[in-house]
Image (tube, rainbow over all chains, first blue to last red):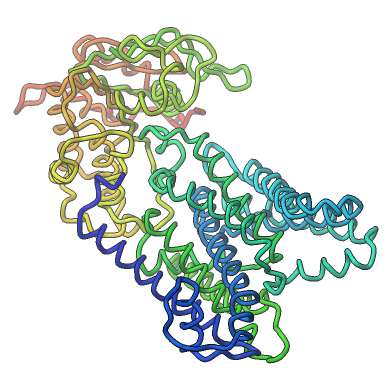
Length: 352
Length: 267
């Protein structure tokens, strides 16, 4: 696929991705080691190496339990959801040809949350079947996200181009509708459903357990890999849908793939950890500003940087108010909102 | 051969392109001319496959356009639309490379270099596309389109261009049309929408005049370039003069004498 790339460019892209991978590993180790129950770095490494059969030092069983049973699934979940939000944001921005697009803005997150809430309120009676809950909730959330993002896309499209103003308006309208419906559903909900909803609004990684990892890994990992195979088509779409068609891209098919994959990633993410804002907006932007717009780098880079930021935010959320925990959505918004403001400010400056 | 037979397209019962038939042979340049609102761009989109006609048919080398996949269509024709916006900071090199997205070529790097050279854009290749001037952008887009059909192939191919010279200065306009002439030797048929009558007269082999969705006249340059027909099509007095230096024909659109009528007509 990379035949048209010069060698130096491939090398530069690989080097960049390798760098991100390295940073991710460091953040993960820090995240595994720090927290209310602190595990020194040597022990952390010793526990990890012990898992693959290499003995490098001694550690206590309690340390290993905290690391492997509590922190590890949490870190993996943060990687999957953060990376997923990053790559889905990059793909949606590319597809809408608009740098302001974010899963939260165009209704994917709210739509997913709405369907997740409906599921939680309506299905508890049959929740004794465990598999319905582990698989049904994320899939239901995915359907909600897909409906909303398709609606926003259809509303904002004219002649193969999405108009930025209509896009934002459509997003606001769909979000308002979904939020109102969430309120309506909650009105009829009982206390336990209400309590579980509170975690939707700001996001919480605390519920991450090993039991949730296989589903998340499959339903976020597979569509993420599928997105990576569409990077050249996304590059073509950046010139416009008509132009992409002229160059031989089956635009309709690519768009369906992008919408379904992104909605699946975001829907599953929302159903697992709740709504987490700004990661999908900020991450692809940072990559583009630093390394250019080629989606062959933007997509994998966004996944890695999303995973890094999410783990970093989770680490902060866990350590600044020990022994309590800050909701992670607060941290990502605290990083994301100022960045968004800076972005608007800069867009204004380049226009004048 | 690129063949359009009885192509028809209407918006709300009003025909924009009205039963138009036209043929484009490989190795010739066909210029499509006409006033604003004549239906040139709509006809262009019908030919490129962007929009589908209500009835009538478009065929590439004998294959019905609706039966060709986007990828197969891209192998036999390249299209340069009037305006192309790029919303992300792609470099010129990256934009031009996109022309190769659905074709396999032997030496992509060399091919891109040749096209950049031909379109006089090699010095821009590392710049961000959005920072270029209007004329530079147009040349880069031309390069992107040319890349798609640059490598010689054993079957006839077609290039469709919608006002490729609209932002270019005189020298660049002629440079672009000269490139188009060299493509004729590669067994490529070229359809180009132009506004400048003199460019068409100098470089085209055939001309089609479009007015109100109908072909007013089509044929060789000599057949079509007549004062009466041009005056009818453009609603403006036109004189044909012989160029004293080259001996070719010069089309002069003088100001309308002795009229107080406003010259803006509703399109």
